[in-house]
Amino acid sequence: MADKKPHINIVFIGHVDAGKSTTVGRLLFDSGNIDEQAMRKLKEKAESLGKGGFEFAFVMDNLKEEQERGVTIDLAHKRFDTKKYYFTIIDAPGHKDFIKNMITGASQADVGVLVVDANDNEIQPQTKEHTFLARTLGVNQLLVIINKMDAVKFDQAKFDKMKGMISELLKTVGYKPEDVPFLPAASLVGDNVAKKGDNLGWYTGKTLLEQLDEIKEPEKPTNLPLRLAIQDVYNIQGIGTVPVGRIETGVMKLGDKVVAMPGREGKGVEGEVKTIEMHHEQMQEAGPGDNVGFNVRGFGKKDIARGDVLGRTDNPPTVATEFTAQIVVLNHPTVLTAGYTPVFHIHTAQVACQFSAIEKKLNPATGEVVQENPDFVKNGDAAIVRVKPVQPLVIEKQKDIPQMSRFAVRDSGSTVAAGMCIDLVKK
Image 1 (cartoon, rainbow, N blue to C red):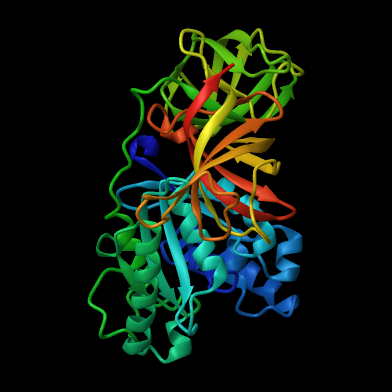
Image 2 (image 1 turned 180 degrees about the horizontal axis):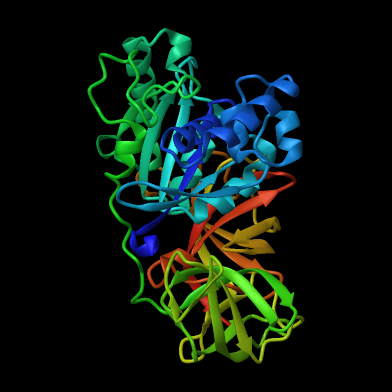
């Protein structure tokens, strides 16, 4: 079975027109993960829609609406193999309306590929937001592709200038630029994605395809307690209730006694794992990063829902009535004060939560306390806040299970803040 290769989730992020989807399509095609015939069909389709040159983007953007508008809306998942790894590529939307989906994608990813346009004279707002979110959501490894080099006549000076700007951005967010590979590319013509190309003679580094095999394999948090955030619940004839979700931490085995929290009543629902399935294959056990469907004796369709978290009965997921978080304010139209009640996106849950107090204002670059009990915080500020969910929700402390501690805060269509839980009051 080919699946013996280590599995890595990779997300492509960046501003709306930087060429993320085209880069992914080119990578899949040039590495032989998509055949000529499928590509020819996409090319004809692109031309018929008056979008010649968009055929590579269409590889991932296969929703009809996306093809007509030429933007990525939903998350697309695609399997992709290199010599060393098997990747699930998550092509995240760059358009600001769709940032919610990007958050979901980034929170599932081990590695981020930030795609920027060599033509830009300044860093685009979405590039900043995506980079920041990737960091806050725990994407620890990053590659940067400076794309559309063909549009700047493969000029090394343009590449160096953009590299300098992005390096500064990475520093402010907390990445170390010296650990981040920067690659020039021209995805539309195919230079330096899976093949070298003739136009970048000055560049002596690796292609994107080669660079992907240099990624450090993420450590699998198998020694942490089992946590699986439920994404959907299906009712399948002959099997019964089948929840689907991704294991964040720990290992799930057949016969495990498990509990889903908070469950419909907020008390949790207990059961025993009967089957585990991934990519249509039955498994004896599954671990971190695996997207699985499973059947539990004792779970009915109405007992559990998206946003519930599964754990073992001997170490159940933590339901918090209140928690303390460290946040960074990204994009609030005015100022954020106590009493504000936006929606928190935590793993797969979406729950309205009230900021009950702003305890400290921090320097976002260093984390030092700048002010105690400020009246408000605004864009660019970091803070320690107290938060009260309006209904029970599962969240864990950063120091216990970091994978279950991160969240994004959204309000009327934009990401207001992002952060992580540092302390909590158990229900």
